[in-house]
Structures are given as C-alpha cells and as structure tokens.
Length: 98
Image (tube, rainbow, N blue to C red; front, side, top):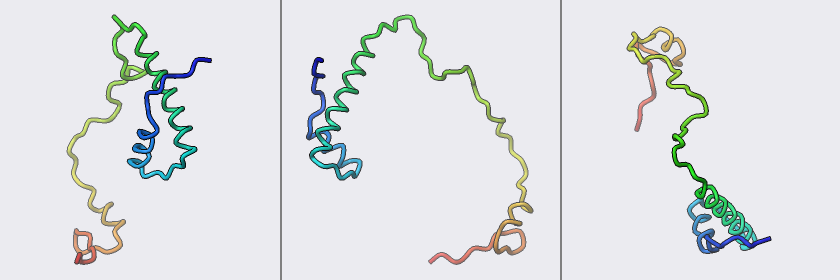
C-alpha cells in the first residue's frame, strides 16, 4: 500500500490541538497527523473529478423556504405575563441589576 503524502506536520497538529484547547499526547499527535493527512489526500482526489457543466447543488431537495411569512402581530402579553414569576401591571418584574 502506498504511503499517503504528508501534508500536515506534527507541529501543525499540536497547533490545532492548542487552538481547540485539547490536551493531546505525543502518541495521539502521531495518530492524528496520519488520519488528517489521509483525509486531505482524499480531498485532493475529489478535486480531480471533472465537474464541468454540473450545476452546484446546495441542498439535496428543492426546498425553498418552508417557514411562514414573518408578519407583525400584536403581542400576546397576557400569555407572557402568565408565565412570569413576578409582575406589576403589564410588565414583568425583575430583580435589580448591580
């Protein structure tokens, strides 16, 4: 089996681990380096595919916007106030912020 090209160094993996705030052992760095290099070599294979004339696909299904229209509506103040632990008139009462 052909050894994959080394694209990422151990120093790169250490830097990524630091950015992700991960404590990674030296053994794990070697393993992660090999795995990340295999992934990147595979992405290079995907880049070789001829996609000339193939339209970009953003979604698997042709759904546009399945959400309802955003129309202004009067607030349901009674329903909101009913859930408030403390209220005064038509307002929710909250503790003072210091």
